Amino acid sequence: MISFLLQNFRFLSFGFLLALASSFGQTFYVSLFSADIRAELGLSHGDFGVLYSSATLVSGFAVIWFGKQIDYVDLRIYACLVALVLALAAFALAMVPSGWPYLILPIFFFIRLCGQGLMMHTSITAMARYFHENRGRAIAIASLGLSLGEACLPLLTILLIGFMGWRDVWLLNAVLLSLVLIPAILFLLRGHSDRDARMNEQIKSQAAANLDVDEVRHWSRDEVVKDPAFYLLLPGLATLAFVVTGIFFHQIHIVTTKGWSMDWFAGTFTAYAATITISAIVAGSMVDRYGAIKLLTVHIPVFAFGLVFLVISDHAYAALIFMMLIGISVGFGSTTLSAFWAEAYGTKHIGAIRALAMSISVLASAISPALFGWMFDLGVSSEKVVIGCILWCLFAATCLWFSQRQILRRRLNTRIVPVI
Image 1: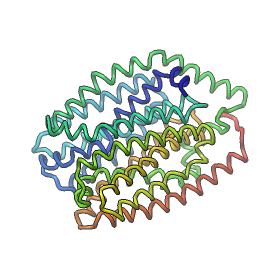
Image 2: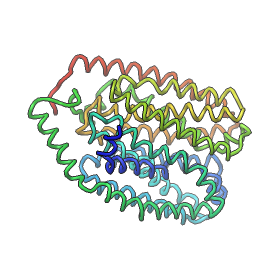
Image 3: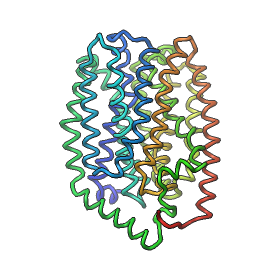
Image 4: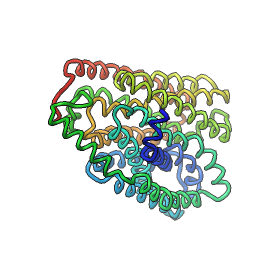
């Protein structure tokens, strides 16, 4: 592991840094500003949830096209453009007039598209494409950037909002993205042209030799959407994005009804991030050893078990146990699923395929803020909402199991197929 880190330090740092920067578009971060934004712009829980969900929904469709472009655009240019647009969106949010609440709709669109969507997409796609033998470890290391953001940013952001106000915090974000992240991308990707040329030459040589290093043909996105196993994956792809986004977006409401302090719950994000880190590293090693397909069904049962604690107890430590268990699930699941696409469908079109998969997650994350908000406005308790999420988890885990069986059976029947 140490030698792997040293040999690939700059490229792994690039993936790590982009994953960290994606925090600015993640729900756990944006939701920290929800009370201040709603108060200043005069929005209810439901109104704010609808605006946020609508922006996320549209970004989920947009990421299908924008995410695909990483297969054709130089990685340096692509990553810098994503960072620049996210910086502009952060600046626009800081400047939104109090009398124009609906302006946050297009602003949230770009924050979600470039933050949650394309920033993380660029990080993980780069790791999955340019690593093979250590793909799981590379994805796990890059993903730790988001874990660091989840560990440090909630408490830090609450302190900064109290000290300088929510608008100035977003101005600071814009400065960091434009004046720190973009120069860092250009520095860390020096010499990337050589890496890309080596990968393309490898694919050509495999095609000429009638071999494929992934033991499957390189599926196109059009072929993937015709695969029955892909549709059985969809409930599992949507689960974590749907439930975690809904809970984190309405965390202030849930924490209040549970009788917990917001400072305490923000502090549990450290434990959440720590368990993500540990489980991602473990998952990376297991993926490299056993394969991502065989590990596909592990994370959702753990996630459902964590949700149980949110239902059965109002004790403060139930929040800690809940955050640790879903952290294990998120860390293991994100690493496994990120490696899964390259393992099951090849790497040649992985940008387009991952963009499609990410759009499913983004669309799921678009639904839950509005749905949860409407249910809370109607007086439905948080416990009943979470029970519904647990039932969905059982359904999603069953679908994943059937998909896994189909893909493993297919790989046993056709081990080596010509590259298309």
